[in-house]
Picture 1 (cartoon, rainbow, N blue to C red):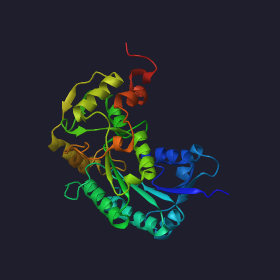
Picture 2 (cartoon, rainbow, N blue to C red; picture 1 turned 180 degrees about the vertical axis):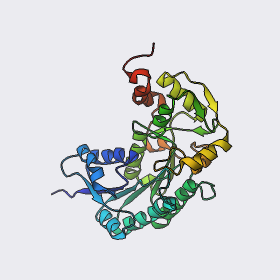
Picture 3 (cartoon, rainbow, N blue to C red; picture 1 turned 45 degrees about the vertical axis):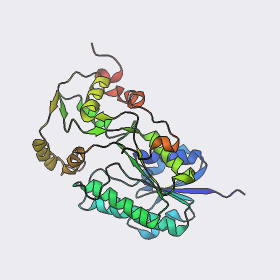
Picture 4 (cartoon, rainbow, N blue to C red; picture 1 turned 90 degrees about the vertical axis):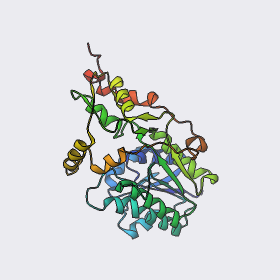
Length: 313
């Protein structure tokens, strides 16, 4: 019998994870989806053959469960990440400490390849807790698994994203609020990020390197919002919001169970989120980046007047 190829994906039920799991299944891996809630990851099983995709309980706080999840795995991918803290210290626990713990377990289990998905803007000196935790996670991975590949995407877009979809919903308001309108982004398609993970696992030359992933177009926040208004066919004035007011509002909103905005996110918005000059990227992994214009309009149609079923008069 042929020996099975096993891949373990931590955080595989999330936005990026579902695409990564699909790519690995297509490459004939048996994919273990290591998550807190295996029942919530069962929808992924339709992306492979019967028994090929296996959700399993592996809370990152349970070292024994993490070790079982990577046992016998040839490749390990870490996608664990959050946009806001439910409890104080979540950034440090899940993004700062957990990546190193997963990498150590993968190394001890004899995995040959490890890919860690971080974020552009990871910086130990950043005022943002999110950015500092991302930098700590990268350092932990490098210390435990020096030949790991680190991928740093810019803002990731796709049908399930929380970026274009969120602002498209806001386009229904009487005006479009603009926060940090000059800040630049380089949105990258989620499918391209998943392809980058697969390429990093397959290419020996990718080991030990860090890649920054961005799409073909750099857009300011104001340009992003204008694109969304044009795509959803909403005529709304764009109103610049004072940062002081937004900090006050974010301080209130971040107390909600699912905050639409936090003060830490405002700190991130004060810095550009684009691929660094001379840093390896998608092209170095053999991937031609998809443009925002070719993907986003397809899933933002539902935000048009009439839900995309009819055009506004």
